[in-house]
Length: 386
Ligand SMILES: [Fe+2]
Image (cartoon, rainbow, N blue to C red; front, side, top):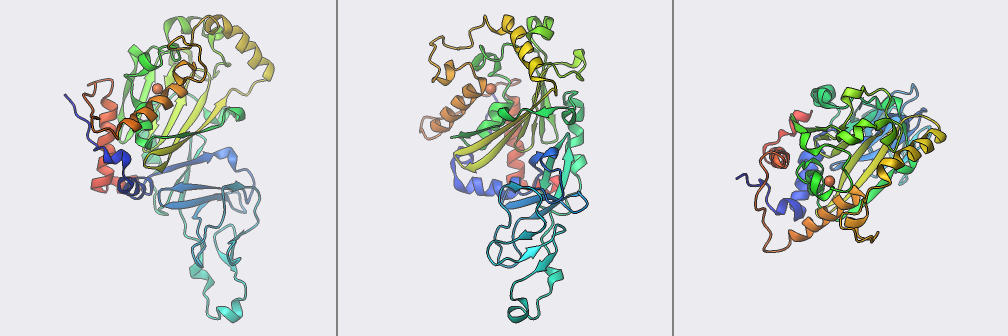
């Protein structure tokens, strides 16, 4: 029998949380957004990468640059959230100002207060930035140069989707506060055992028995084909227009988890990011963004009508109670997952809590993931992500 490898404290203690922030989230590439979030010089966004807040912007030549989002004067955060077309970056505290290359260009009362100030050594600290499959990633280390090495080994296991050719479905952008440790959410995402059980009424479109999964480095990959009856009439059954550039023999659900905390959902009709953000030992935020085919609203309505034949007759309610407020009766697989993650987190407090067994094949990923996390915490493996 395989026993889990992380102790309960890994999911409950502030000390573990802090160590993860330093040795995992400050040492790996973090998802920051979509390439199209930034289009003009001076457009910017900010993202937390472990103990670092990073700002990403387009410079005067529309080149993407990343800096640590702290003023060189007294360390105040410079920019908040995201914004458009900034000409320069001024600190709110004392108005020290930087250009879009991170150079310090203005200091109020400089002549009288800082007669010997050397502007050159007080540029913003650089960070690393890279783009892959239409996504922006940052790394706090300016010399983190193996971005390609970090993600490319995963390519053969991903869907044939070209996210750059899809458009964001803005109403589908959601943020969920979840009362669970971030690793419980990851473990739920990569657990192939629960799919036909917890999601028996919500993910019946996929053939869970034919799932294939594994690891490439620290990254998890997962694929399962569509269920036979769904695939047979897929042009009509799909609730959204099919992604037209995915060959029919490659169609299915690809749901990798990029270490440490970014899930992708690459399906027959959409492409999504599932970003798990640790907030506290027992609290996380999941931000979901989705892309779909760039076709007219009319096409979307037509497709929805057509799919009614397949979905309309189905009961999506696991227990048939009809109570929409019950996550297990909601017909929403995300609500089902959130429910079990929060329940598991609560159970960790019970003196009777233990893991009885881990399924050798279908939960193997959970076991392997815990080893990967432990390697970072104990072994300083983080340098491999550089
Ligand atoms: Fe699930």
